[in-house]
Length: 487
Image (cartoon, rainbow, N blue to C red; front, side, top):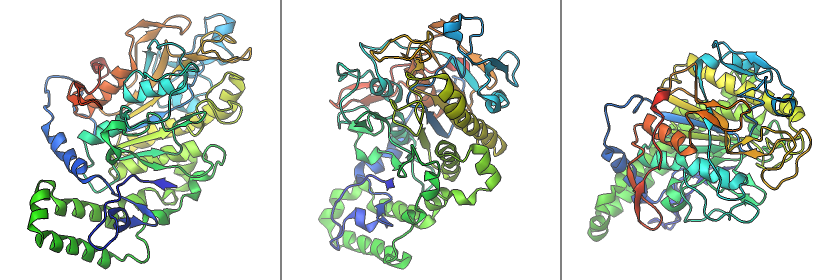
C-alpha cells in the first residue's frame, strides 16, 4: 500500500485537508502547512561555499540500503590471500577498471565499475552490544543511538528520534517540480518487532516523513511490485478535476472574506500551498512514475524480475520524474532467514549469497548504473549502496551474541564497503583500503557520518549547517566532514 503522512485539520466545508486531497483513498500532500512552506525558505538561506570540489553537483539521491548487513569480503573486497577461514569460497574476478576486483558472484557489476567508486574503509566502533537497529540508526541518521537494549536492539520509533537523512535533504532541498519529495520502498526498515526505526522524520515532524510504498508480501512474493494499485495515485471518481479546482477557489474566497484569519496566516501563503497541492495531484507525474508497465520488458528483465530489481527500477523512474530522494530498502527483515530473504548470514553464508542475494544485487545495481549513465541521469544523481555493517572476516565466530554456523559470518561494523557513484563522484576508483583480512581500515577510515556529509555536500547543503535537536539545542547538521577526495 502507499502510505502518505498528513494532518487532519478541518476545511471550510467540513472535510479534512487529508480528505480534500484524496487519491484513491490516500492523501498526496497533507503536510503541516508552516513546515511545508518553510522548506523553500530554508533552502534559499543556505550559504554556498565555492572553493570545495563537488559542492552542489548532485540534484538527487538514490540510497540503496542493504539492511541486514552484506558480507564485504564475499562481494566487494575479496581477500584471496587470506587464510581459508577468512577468504571464503568465492574467487575474485577482474572488473572493467584495472586493479579493481570483485568476487565471482558479481559478474554484471564488474562490467560497470568504471561508473562507480568503492569505499573499502567504512568503519565505526559500536557502543556496547550492537545489532541491526542500532546500526541502521547510526547509518541513516548520523547519530549514535542512546536507547540500545541489552539485546542490542532499539525501542520503537519515537517523535524524539533523529530524522532519516532523506527527511533532512528534503527539508533543505524540496523538489523543483510538483512531485513526491522522498519515497521509501519496498518495505520498512525492521529488526524483529522494531519497525521503521531511522526511517522517518522524528522530531522534524510528520510533514517531512517519506512517502512509503510497501506492497504486501514484498519479502516473499517476487511479483509484489506488479501488484501495486496504480489507481491509488489517481483522483477518486467522485472528485473531478473541475470540482477540485472549485474547492481551491472556495478556499481563496473564504480566506479573503475573513480578514482576521487572513492576517493570522498571511505569512504562510495559503494560496501557494493549495496551488502546489493541486498541481501535484492533477499533473499525474507521481501516478505515472509508479507504473512499471510503461517500461519495456527488456529493461525490466535487465534490472531483474524480483522485488529488489523492480524497486531499483522504480527508483530511477521516480528520480526521472522529479523526486529528490529515494531509499530502496532490501526487501527483508534485517535479521531474517538468510536461506530465504536476508543478508543476515549467521546460519549460512555462501549458498544464500551465491544462489539468492548476490544475483539480485548484481542485476539491479549494475542495471541502475548502466541505465542512469545512458540517460544522462548519473551526473546529477548520487547513488549509494551500503548496509548497516559488514560481516565478520573470520567464519563461525560470534561478535554480536548470536550463534553462527561454521560457514556463517556475524556482524562487523569495524570495516566494510560502500559503493558510491554519480553526483560529481570521480568514477573508477577505490577510496580507502582494508587490511589483509578485511578486519579494519588500513588507509583513510570513513565513518558513516562522513558518507552522509558527502551526500549533503554534493547536494549543495553544507554539512556544518546549524540545526536544532528535539530539545531546540543548536548543533551541526551532521558531525562529519565530506570526503572531498571522492570528487
